[in-house]
Length: 571
Image (cartoon, rainbow, N blue to C red; front, side, top):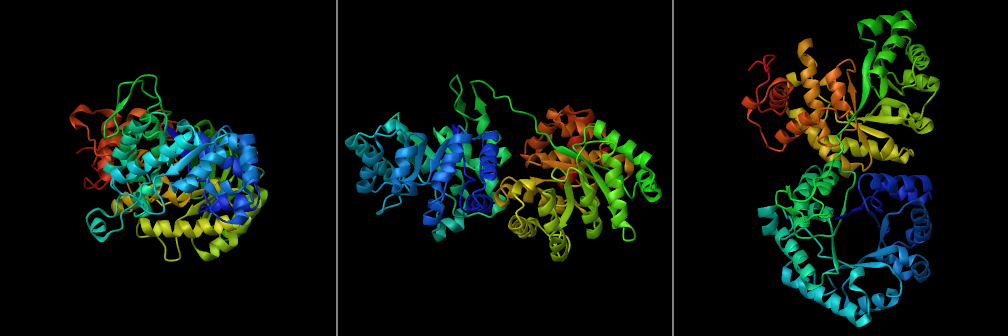
């Protein structure tokens, strides 16, 4: 099954900005990231605007020169005959409605080219919701192809998945599409003509839902579409779980593969999936630490440089330099710490302070500004105003902290609202999604599991809110207030839970060898265990021992299934 990335759409502010600015580097980067995620094609949707349509040639020239991806471009290109003649052999036109007179003209005009054609199984008279209506239009499309001499092998038929807005359906099923009829339509399309291919937009299945619930629905519906024989799916390639699932259930294997409605693969060859990994931001050089804090106050470089070397050797991708509020001498302390650490290691830095003046002074001292991280810009107007221009000027990465004027967000929806506010402000300043790390804020387990669940739910929303953006979280926040010897167990399991939703970085205790092994992807069996429990697949605890049993018990506390107490590992 071919995966087609959907992010080059005019509703994506990052793509729109890159298009309007003719930012070749940004366009190529977006294409490469989707290809790296598993896309074999890209959907280019420029809408019907003449202004954006005029940029079609520029866009196609760049992508055809820099990538080998199949390009699905919106049907506005049919009005640009010069571009059709120039690029027609390298594109698929998407999506043409099945108005037979217009369709015949289109097929006749492009049949001598080698381009493909995606036809929506709708016309000006009907948008069928049943199998019979879709099949009737499909037959008409194929008859038109035969009359005009257009090869059926170059046709994609789209059954058009849509939510059902009628009151009864909304009441009983939330307006979700009738996937049974969609899947049956795909099967019958194959029966009509084995050369013709089928295609569907997966995001269309969930437009009636809140963003936080969309990814889970996509994961549920994709196996059904593939089982029906779908040849290509247009989807969000930044949803790592979705792309992983698509790879696991792909029909493009040497042997015949059968897929159950639950998405399990039987027969054929098993796909080898790379282990999930997280880049660690080492947290121990902190004004509150005994060793580092004393050295900061006395300006003794030796201990800090030793710690930086130790954290780097432990596998840290970044070193966090936390000087706290530093009200008295922050503008001098932060540059000193930066220079001290950069003299010892080449590991990129993460500057961490609530003092905006100290943050600005610190970034003046940083040598490798573009690789560094600003920790953080919260959703508070005064902090956004002070630091966003600095981040834009330096080109650094930014932790977007989901903490607003009223403090901690109450649930995933408030987190999403803050994320949109921060994203808009950062994008308007020229900071792309790829430079942003959203922090949903981990909260102490001692306060209960509700906020932990809300943070995880937000992580499911993030690919829809900010395609291409990364994420981070302070793992030790979840274990704050717990006995020191027990904190590592909470941190480790919490990290694995976050990894299920594509966590890209985490602020970690790099001296915890087991935690760093999880970051590097060296504990796949534990990741599989915890993720299985998150999906409702619980093992018999009597069969577990050692670290597996520790994660089993810890997950039940973090998920709220078991009452938390400091004896949770002993119960």
